[in-house]
Image 1 (spheres, rainbow, N blue to C red):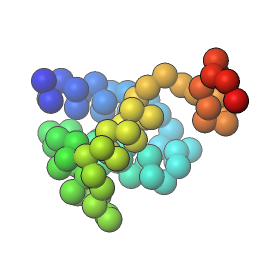
Image 2: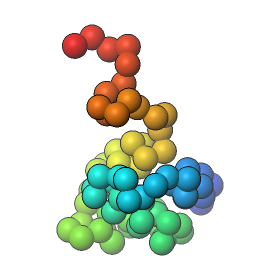
Image 3: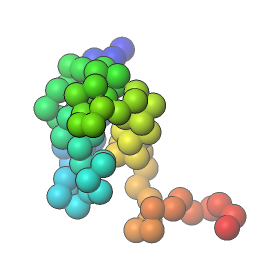
Image 4: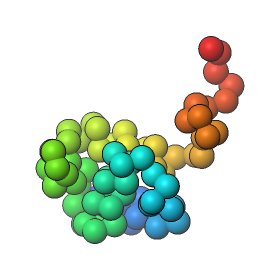
Length: 79
């Protein structure tokens, strides 16, 4: 299961312009592309400084989830 998810993440990230990403997201994207076999916890330990599994998972969701408007907010919510 982990391997399938990692391949799907890598495929989604491969279509992104990494240079346009926020540095925090770019770091996680580059780690996933460079280490497709690692779990999220292992990716977090490979980050500098190390990140928690939850932090890596959240950033991965932002990288692989549906696109959001330029402001980074999803539409449909109340403000």
